[in-house]
Image (cartoon, rainbow, N blue to C red; front, side):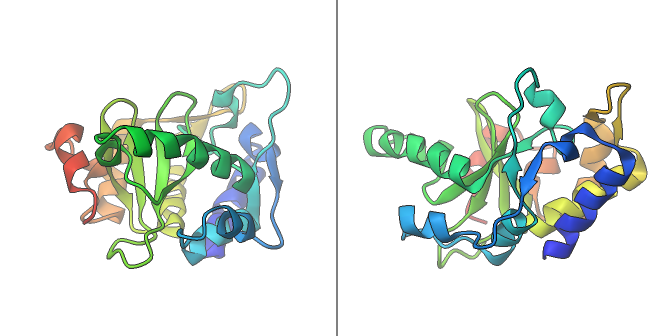
Length: 209
């Protein structure tokens, strides 16, 4: 699990990607803070592996979120930052009946591009898709991107190897979303995030699969 994540980060470091320079040191006890804050969540092992490899992204003054995008679209939260982001959603679930369809409860945030979108991990203990990664499209809803955090990073390595993500002149990562989606669809069968034949509003209603 951690090998897929560490291999991708190692590739970025060898390339000299700026985003790799902002990664925080990994946590020796990943998931401990989440369990204390939200005992009803069950973070999957490879989410813990993610925070063991690196505990989010350091915010450096004068640095834009785009410069911190780790795979051309998202910068990744530290465990504490993810806890704060999840906590901010709690009153929305309590006060808005429709919010649970948009962002299902116990789907824990791990990354965002800078706007209201997110990468979420299913942390529902008995869910058939526990551990799967979903992309939450701001104002639209979610669809499944990968079966696990490790598989998501294996997909990112596939993008890097195929040139679907690359370093620009400022050593920031950019992504060709058309090429990346084709690669991701092959590496993540059954994950409708990469299926353009279904609009996101439809896919959002089918999140539990």
